[in-house]
Image (tube, rainbow, N blue to C red; front, top):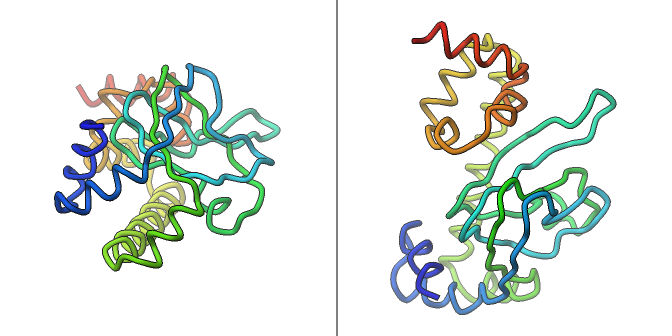
Length: 188
């Protein structure tokens, strides 16, 4: 599929690498808005690429659900700790728009990982960036005001402001949608 190939090329893979990955990300799945890629308690056995749509990662808490992250079109997606440890997920990954994915099962991923150095380098870099991102978000929640967290998000993830519904942005920032509206109004 050309779209899958284009996504891999946009991530910096060579044409040969992108073709190999496209051949292996061969399972397609459509998920309607509100349906889940994975729910807490299930084990994640796939890595996906979002060809169309958006997904939110969230936790259920006594106070309600809390959005941890949003994955957009062109992003890789998995429940990372569940996928790596082969344990039940503690998060939910739900479509917030009608979505289309291509996926690779863990068994095929492990084969590619064993055979190709570029896959190992890509995986290491992905894990590093994921960890750094989590560390930055934890620091921001602890050390920055809501306004500073919002400015940081705009600088580092401008697509969120353009593509993600406000209620999910607010949840990721640890504020109410009303507070987010006040921050935006004060910024203008």
